[in-house]
Length: 280
Image (cartoon, rainbow, N blue to C red; front, side, top):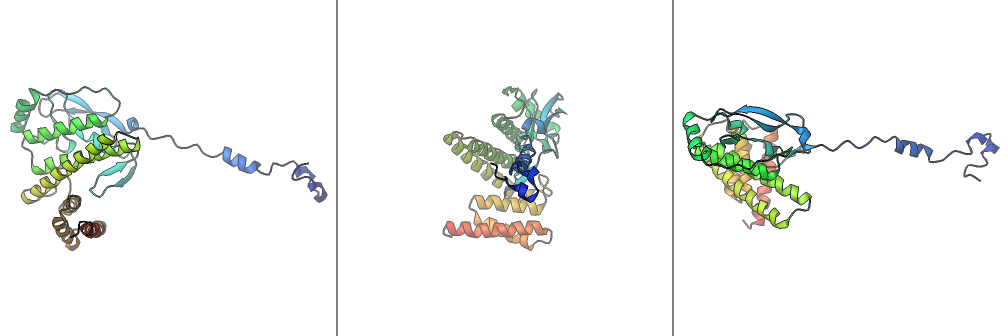
């Protein structure tokens, strides 16, 4: 006998054979499939460039603007996207002469600077050849190292060198997070942590120098944003006096918007907590 037998007594004999969970089964069957995983190769494309040093044409992989979903931003302004580490794609490298720079600065090079690149980079550089669909972290790291040495050789402004160091620190962080998520080697993870800290120390040093000798905007950022960034870096490096001074300046600034002031207040609380931990 079925669980609904006897319904005939109520004139509902035609419903005695119903499966009491049939509706749930149908709903489960009709549930939409999970969206396909976002693939990094689908978020980039090859773009052509002309090298301002040697004149050769080349292609570089670039992230598709607006295609990747922004997940959030770290305190030091590193943007995080779904399915891709955008930092890997921000250095342009000419495979013919070895000139490399963050995309923002790639074409802003004078003839005297180009001559220095040819003399000190192009005549002796050896580059690893990669054939992958995407830039791996090893490849991206090589590109950033070349961009930094090119910046030093061409006597770039402190802000440009600081920006390269900042983004190199972000790259180390992304690489480390990737290894942690995939059960990577603990020794390599520790090495990347140390490299990140070293790059951020150099970014801090460069931005401090740039604030004293250069105008704004700087690296595409206004004065308030740079001050906030330097305050974050100072906090990471336990330079609490510098961080506190910059945060107070932001909170008193008429140029800082409400969102920036809110972030500055949060940073102020973090500085207080960090100082307590450090016994200051």
